[in-house]
Structure formats: structure tokens, C-alpha cells
Image (cartoon, rainbow over all chains, first blue to last red; front, side, top):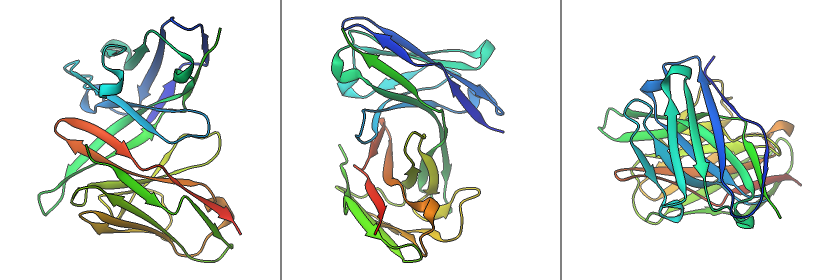
Length: 126
Length: 109
């Protein structure tokens, strides 16, 4: 079955960097973009950016520009999200998700995330 | 930037009753809207895409409707496993950008 499996929880000090992995299985890794979404404790979902595993092209939410880098290793069907200059506000669960889309009969492009990884808790604390 | 607004923030419903959740976009997103369910400690799960198409394996009691700026997720007869937080989401195709609503918590009345 289509599955995304993420790396384990991390504890980092302020100013450090963290790199979260997301291993895909059950489909052709290079055929679907991977998006990253985070969720602080008790809060909603926040979109961080996307990566095309085939080309390596990326796009980031303005909030994370300059601090986030999304990469991949196609030989092992794994995507990575690295966040630098960590601060306490970055404490959250980070999710990867496969980006799916289609064109409806009416010519509208509709898109969605499915499936999601199980999430990786990143704790930033001194 | 498109802003997604969900209402209400919390919905108290008895098992077996109908639940109606709303999602409003600050500008038209056509039918490019998805709904997700999230239970405590779990990743979000896709329920609906294209505003009204149920994802694989989603029970028929979940239905989505709307287009443009106003959308609705209806759960026809709430089951115990449906108590969760529900998020709507739109995705701007260019430049690529995803936006989520703030969520609606469906709790037991």
C-alpha cells in the first residue's frame, strides 16, 4: 500500500538545525510532489512547502524562506526537510504528505494530500 | 493569499445526529477544496477532495458540497469514531501554496 514513513522524534537546542526524513513506498516516488506541513501542540495545520522528487524543484512558504531546505534521494525514495536556526516556536509535529491532483471534467485542477506520514515531533529546548 | 475560515470552532453533537461544518474561502477556489479528519495523536486523514468526492474507504455518511467560496462537510449520523477535528484545505496551483482552515472540533454532546 502507499505509505510514507518518517524518522523519529528529535530534541534540539535553539539555534541548531534538524533534518526529518520521509520514506515513500508503494508508488513511484518521482511521480508525486511531497509537501511538508507542521502542527504545534494544540494548534492547526501550517503548510511549509513542496518538493518535486523528479526535478528537485522546491517552493517554500514565505514564513520559512531562508530557513527551510527540502531535498530528496531518489535511489532510496526518501524526501528530507531541514529546518535551521531553530527556536522554541518551531516545536511541533512535522508531517510529510504526498501531493495528488487531477483535472475535473469541467477543466478545474483539484488537489489534495494523501497519504500523510505519521509525523515527527521536533522539540526545541535549551 | 487565500484565507480559509472554518465555523464553528467547536460543534457539540450527540451520537446519531447530523453534523454540518462550514468552510469559507476569502476568494473563489472553484471546487479545489479538500477535507481532512484528525484524531488525537494521529496524522490527518483525507476524507473529501474536489469539494465533494469521497476518498477511498471513506463511509457514505461523509459528504461534501459547495463551490467558489462556500463549502460544507456533512456527517449524516455521527458515530463514536467520528469525534475528531476536521480541517478544510485549498491548494493554489501557481505559485504552489497550501492553506488550511483553523479546524472544527466535533465533540460529544
